[in-house]
Image: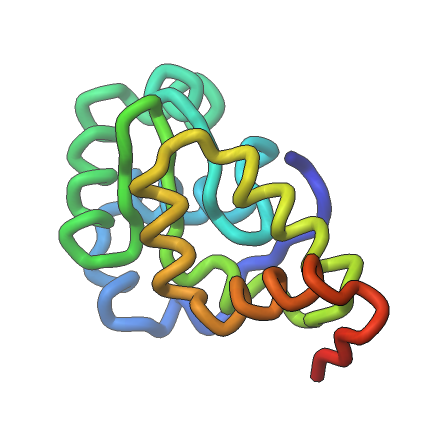
Length: 143
């Protein structure tokens, strides 16, 4: 879904990231900033597509994804849905009504119920703002 996203420079000093092998570091950065990703980190991408775009062999891609899942950084779901758990924390810098509408659309586009539920539980406050906006669009004042 294109758009502007960033990776925080201090990721290179994070002990969990330092321990990752090169292909897994590339995979994690790809999941944050690829054209298939989005500001909430909840998107669909097949292993074959990721392998093609990163040039990571499928076996190493699977190992890397498993490592990221084990570390709690990523969750994977049926139908090639992926959720980069803290992506929205680093990418959503405003709670403007326009951003909330955009995020609502991204959540609704996800047809994996478990992924949507996991995201909604993790970002409960954000989802509550979206629900409030839908109920009273002209009266929502977000900080």
